[in-house]
Length: 308
Ligand code: KIV
Image (cartoon, rainbow, N blue to C red):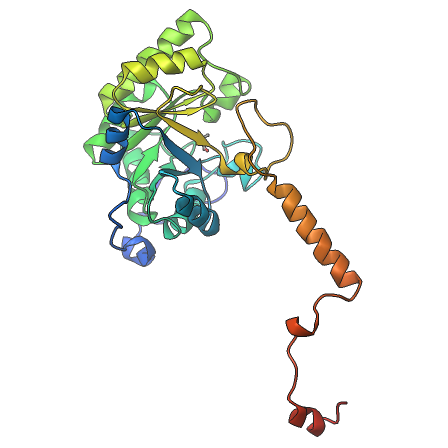
């Protein structure tokens, strides 16, 4: 049984689905395709990399063609796409479905998929099975899971099974009920030390990168300097090796107040609203569709039908 505590749907099969049923991603790689060695080399050279989320084919294509290094099929899909309000209900099926579409739209970037809440919490075997499903069926090139020292054994096990792992510490949105909200983590000396220790333990366990979410920039800087693996910052200051943002925050496809670390580079919500309202107005005035946007009969057919 493929474990999935998601509330939306559960894969009923007892096998990891046949990867050949999803041939779209089984294409030869382009020479510039980003894999782990490129991430390591960038850290060694002090080159900054960028990561964005994507959940569908067109945005994945746009993000990839823009030259982003890493695409995360994040469980933020729960907030951004499904409107759940948090990431807790996101199911493995939802990530797999998004992942397949993203993978089809990506040639260059490394594709990382989130293990959603409930898919790595029961036991290690089930976690491996779920991660393998993301890789074999969805085409993920790495998986991400949340947690610090409590995930060390799990990270080791996944890495033993040749599954590249991105860890995620600081604010871990899947713990929202435990944390009681989305707040900056690691602000006291003890909490900061704990985060630094967690990062080192996760590095030792074999994670190749660690997301640092909503942590003071000083703490992120210490971690970035003290670990050899890449730090991926979101609300964690400029010193991280890689910066990640939720695409919809960057392009202004969001509702409500945004956290202060978000810099909005476009307002697509406004652009979309304008386009929709212009179209509505043209329809109501009878200006859409015009003749060029319509199809007509030949003169001969019109004669036969006795149309002027
Ligand atoms: O799900 C997600 O988009 C994430 C990023 C915020 C790092 O985990």
